[in-house]
Image 1 (tube, rainbow, N blue to C red):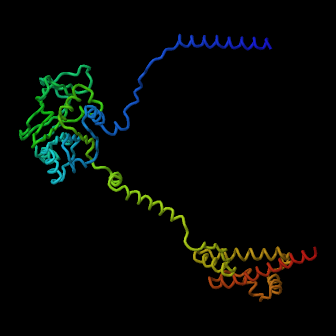
Image 2 (image 1 turned 45 degrees about the horizontal axis):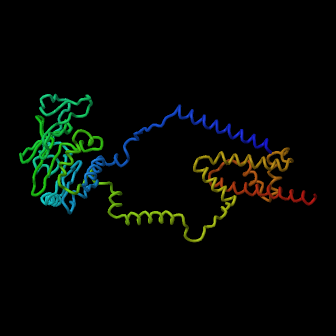
Image 3 (image 1 turned 90 degrees about the vertical axis):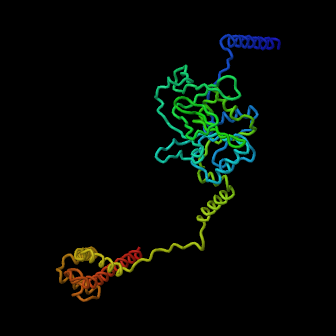
Length: 408
């Protein structure tokens, strides 16, 4: 008993020593580190290029909502705020455009960027609101030399990103830097803009006062996109444009949604009803109506009818003569196999012998076995005689089989 206790104590002490040595080795060879793994852009950020701007505005206590579609353009919000439209798109209906302008006059701020360049031939920008303001978007070659721009500075890292443009803004003591697209410039053709941000190449921001509100046209909204809002003073510019507004709506897509999506948004009950109706329709197609039809056995055609049909077919395909000769040879061979005595007889004697056993005139038997082809009508008549000869062979075979069974 004491010996067993000593053994178990030794084993426990050895395990403790091994565990202590293992912990010391692990701590000497490994250390805890924190590592950040970039998993890429989330699905929500891929769908909404203004998601980072939305979260930034919410952090500075501006109630912000990202929306898609044209609902906010067709039906402006009830309260004033900032309505940012990522790409303005085509013109609104006249009454909807007037409703949007009325919302701006009541204190709203509309921030838009043109989608299409100014068309010199048609003399339009593709949107009646921009034409009314006199805003023209021009796309220029990005490879042009920009050294003559006094407010532009070169990109420090030499990357393809546009160099930031420094300009002064009301309410800010120092100039702010914003990297606008170098390809997209604006022109105020009517000269009605109250405030501009422009270079020698053209403008990047035009602002128009309308009643108690404002309309700001910016050359591009790339500075407010997810990858760029954290660069330079892009977030500061967005906050300054919001100003004292308490609400903001970021319309990241003004395109009309697909018809299925639009139906689901407007009438989800109708969509669910149609889907249920479709399922019921498919299910109903699997059901039968009325009693089960019985599959009858095919009716066997009479041999005479079959021969007549075959004869008609062969006649139409010009093969009647060959079939006639073939049936004669097959029938003669069948009688010879059944009655070997016929093999030693002449043709006339053979016909007489068969006629006596069948009960037919000798002339008909000879015509059926050795006669020449005499046309369709004669073919049908001879076929009837051949059928009778074949039937007699079948009867004789049955009689022989029955006799063998009786004798057994």
